[in-house]
Image (cartoon, rainbow, N blue to C red; front, side, top):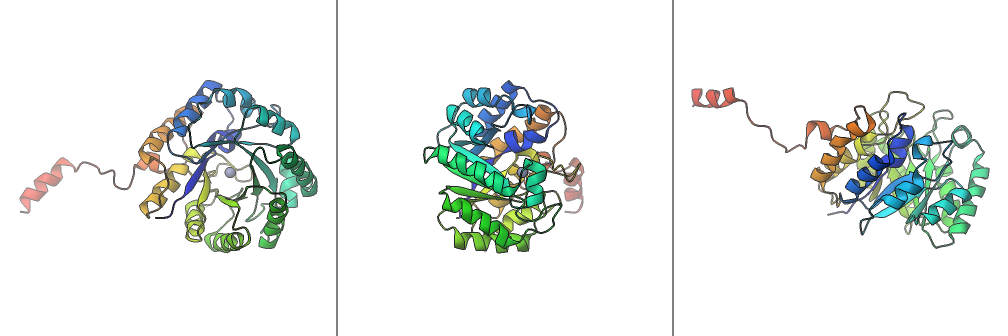
Length: 312
Ligand code: ZN
C-alpha cells in the first residue's frame, strides 16, 4: 500500500485569505488539534510583515505556544532574510519559500520580477546554511490567470535553479486552480524523473472543481506528498467566491477509499473540520465534513421495515 504524506496549510494559506482576524488562542488550539491527526507537516504561519498580512501578525506567539507533536514538522512561510531570522528564532522545522514561475503573477503578487525574488530567496537559503531544511513553493506552475498556460519547461527551469542551491523539497502549486489531470500527469512524470532525490509536493486548488481529480492523477504518477487546507479554506483573488485549496479531509477520504495509506486519523480530522465554520464565522467548501464518510451509514426509515414485512 503506497504511503501518502500530508501537509496542512489551513492556518497559513487558508487564514491568509480570511477577512476577520482569528484570535491567537483559537489558532493555537486549532493547530494543537491538527497535530494529533497524523500529518507529516503543518504550515503554521508566515513571517511576512504584519502590515502586509495582518491576519498572521501573531506568528511568533503562535509558534511559541503550539504544542509540537513528535513526528510532525512545523514549517513556516519565509518571504525574505528578515523573515528567515524571525523563523529561525521561532525554531521552525522548515522554511517554505515562495515565488511564481510566471513573471506577471510574480509582479502582481510579490511586486518584483522573478529574478529579484530568486536573488532574495537565494540569500535565505544561504542564511539557513543547511541548519534548517528549505522547501520552495513554485506558484502558478500550471497556468497564470494573466499570461495563460505556463510551459512545463519554464517550471523545470526554476526547479533546477533551486535544486542547484541544495533545497530539500519543491512544492509545485496550482495557485489559481488552472491545472487539469492530463497536465498534472505529464508534470509529475517529468518532475519525478528529473528530481528523484527531492521531496516533491503538489499543491492544488479546487477553483474549477478539478482539485481531487488532479490529486488522483499525481498519486498515480507516484507523488506521495500533498498540501491540503482544512475545509478547503483559502480563496483565490482571481476567482472571487470560488473555492480555495483542496480540502484536506476530502482528499484523505478519497485516497483512503482507493487504498492509500495516509497516516491520518480521518474521524479525528473530521471532528476538527466540523469546528472550522465556527472558527472563521462562515461555511467552508469541504464536503465530507458535511456529508459524512461513504460508509457512515444512516438508519433506515421506519416505513422501510413496514415495507419489508409487507413484501415478504
Ligand atoms: Zn494554496
